[in-house]
Amino acid sequence: MNIKYPMDWSNWINLGLLLATGLVGILTWYGASRSAREALDAQNQANVAAARSAAAAEDAAKYQHRMMEIENQRHEESAIDAKRAILHAKITTKPAFRFNRSESDTFLTIVNSGKSTAKNLKVTINQKPMNEYGECATKLPTDATIGPNGHIDFMLIYFLSGELHPPFNVSLTWDDDSAFPGEWLGAVS
Image 1 (cartoon, rainbow, N blue to C red):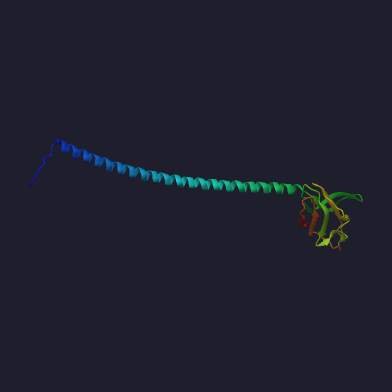
Image 2 (image 1 turned 45 degrees about the horizontal axis):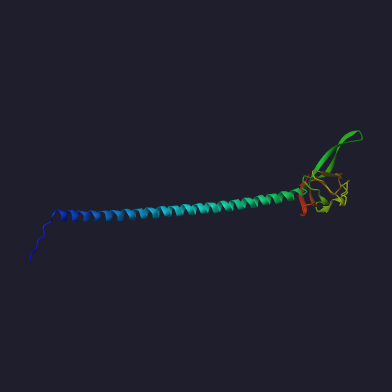
């Protein structure tokens, strides 16, 4: 038995509605999956940006910490420098008038350019204590001190047959309020 059902208008309408509903479903699925993919891409970009921001914040925190360390070190060094004597030696001359003649006297001058008094000063010339040289007309007192921005002059008289001839090496050691022993070594002429 062969039964044929004629397609009437209502069947065509139902078929059209079915096809339209299927097409809307497919388009909705495609749009939703595309939106989900875009949302996932946006989320990944946001995660990358957040990671960069966190790394930058961490770097900034490390930089700030290092800056604080440097600033604290500078304050500590400044506090120590305020308690430190800074000595160096040099040869100086001063005009003198003897026997109706203009001359100049020679001095070993030790200068304190620091902010603290130098105490327990010891001076060696060519690795020998200064007071052992006959050329040193002025002797170093045992309790020698040099105040801030001060100096002390030791008159030198050079002899042709003497031991001391410029240039010579001078070594200075001293104590000050910094609790670190001071030392200077240099050649003077």
